[in-house]
Image 1 (cartoon, rainbow, N blue to C red):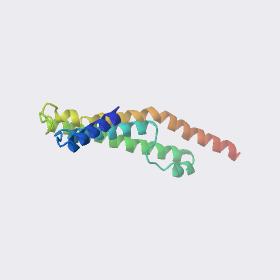
Image 2: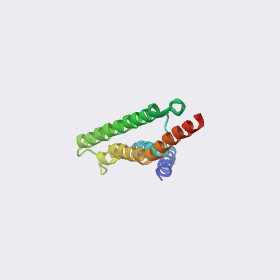
Image 3: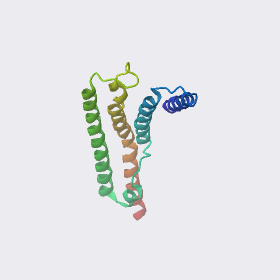
Image 4: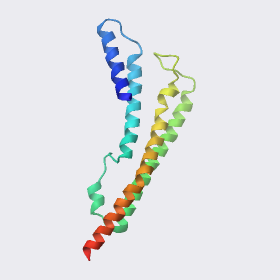
Length: 149
């Protein structure tokens, strides 16, 4: 939905510009929609474990080292998103009563709310997919120990 809205806003904005009647708001709205798309897309990618990682290195580890590496990695990711959420809430408090430049009826805090919301969604996605990751790690260890015998 965000992608379709962004595409529509850009096409309408370009159309009006080509017609010689530029819209003053479309580029600001498009950039906010792009930020929302980025944060929400990152949360969706987190849920599917589609971010950049080093699965080959982790797969070559054995036993407790592999489990510890996965848990430390998860803690680092969660810590980052907790810090991002905290910073996002701070940004919202700083913005206070400011509004968008081109649309004074829209509060800037609405536009920037994507920072803490996206961070919380990423944390939730990591936590929701963590059991699958841990079962993969422990089952891989179990499979390796039975083939070693």
